Length: 463
Ligand code: 4AD
Ligand code: MG
Image 1 (cartoon, rainbow, N blue to C red):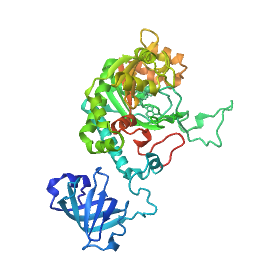
Image 2: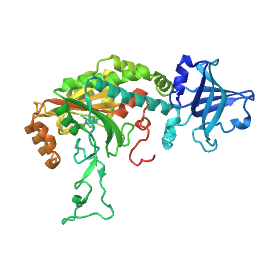
Image 3: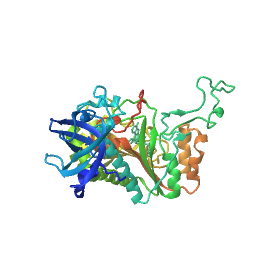
Image 4: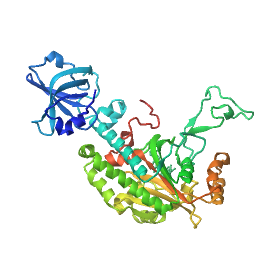
């Protein structure tokens, strides 16, 4: 049987006057002994379908299980609505109950739960207006990302989640093992004998698909990845997750300027896609959480990002006279407070910072002639700080090898990566966009735990 969603019922004028069926979860029921109104939501849209029950046709007993959170199906005539705020409603001729929800124990009674409380019941929060809106926007953005790259002729490359190499070199990896932790096999020196482990060597969940992405780009030309990424850093901030999703395009023959141009076009495209396709949800979030949301989204789409070097950025920060929690001078890694000062207070625009000191960036970045900086580019956003990190890659075999040795990165993990520079090496570039940071920006939410269905953070892996 053909299923019609509430979104379709509310937006298809040809259906008015016809017999329709609707299914969903009851948000509220109110009314009197003559007529009862049920607000029904099936997740297809932020808008509810109003079900009108003429009480001369139904008994109180029949209506009793129709409480907040219960699931029902209704048939009846779709008619234009008299009430304000809704286009049409269904005049129930019959209805049935799929499942009840005990009013004493169902946690989502009425409105007004805090986001903190809703995190404790993340298994049910998708049924709220807020999380319905966020998850629909998230889904639309995921589609926009594929659309953008596919239209440009990029290929979607799936990179491994289990890996033996540490792309970012930060050592923040989750180990993967099938060894019995209570009875570890040991070698002669008393160290764990990984030859007995599943992959016969130490492995971990990936912190980035970039290294394999480069293998793809130096074969297919332009690729992108879009997958889960894992970081075992103990950072309890509103912008870090232990499991997040990252989009990593990698392009042969692109220099850092091409890379910045692509990154800017890409994020603007995604934001614009959300503005064109998710306005009901964005308006709801604006009204509930962030009064300047739509204006901020439009502003980012309509303006050029400011581009300057890390060195120039640091000078501005030093001259600002502002007291930062973390002092800043040439050589320090920038904190969120520094990034946000540049974006929100100084330039009042998204900023792309380039040419960072090599010591604070990963081994694979192209080294500049000055011997001190690398061709890195970070895109910094209002409310977020760093949303994208990327670079031109070092394509010289000798320079890359020297850097790998300097940083004591084990060669046994890197021989295959170095082969891209031994055989037909080309200039190339890429970047990584943190998907949840994009969703955070587009929804106006303030905590990254509220833009992924089931967040993973230190100490938290429920649901
Ligand atoms: O700057 P990062 O660490 O760069 C890379 O991993 C490169 N391999 C990307 C590349 O050039 N292909 O991470 C990229 C982005 C950050 O800018 C941020 O948006 C996001 O990933 N990110 C996180 N998002 C949520 N939680 C975390 N713990 C994150 N760490 C990074
Ligand atoms: Mg970064």
